[in-house]
Image 1 (cartoon, rainbow, N blue to C red):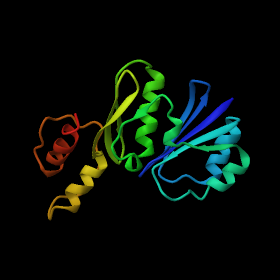
Image 2 (image 1 turned 180 degrees about the vertical axis):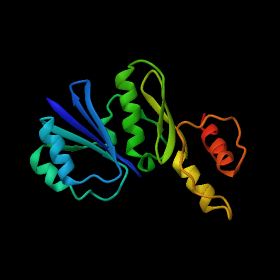
Image 3 (image 1 turned 135 degrees about the vertical axis):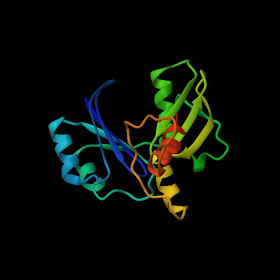
Image 4 (image 1 turned 60 degrees about the horizontal axis):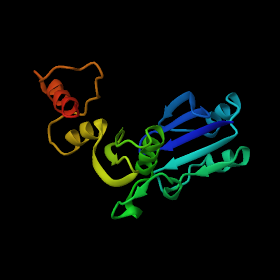
Length: 185
């Protein structure tokens, strides 16, 4: 049985195709359209899908996809291996509970720190007994770059450079890169 796992984040939608526990295919998109998903469903002979979404609105493609294959919307109560001790569970992002449930499934009986980098960077801890108490939320890489540009008068908006490794910058661009990228190490 081949399953399509869809993680709809704030900026990107991530897809994974699984055959049991084996990951066969991954992709990520800023914009997902119906034709793309239908191609993936056909090409990989998908039999069902599970979706985790931080967004309040339903994607346009959802109705069509759900007529082709069974679609499960991940909910916090599906994370049976996790005891959620978060003080405000209604405000906990479904992506965070899915991530700690995944860590517990991959490393049962072990304490895990789950780090998820995207629009935000979340650091969540689940202990060896599956107890989740919370974690931290911080601006993600591109969010940091955008904030410097937006909240300052003279700093330019620049792109992340995966090859940048200098400990400090010697001009405004490299100083921003050093602050943003080294600040995440």
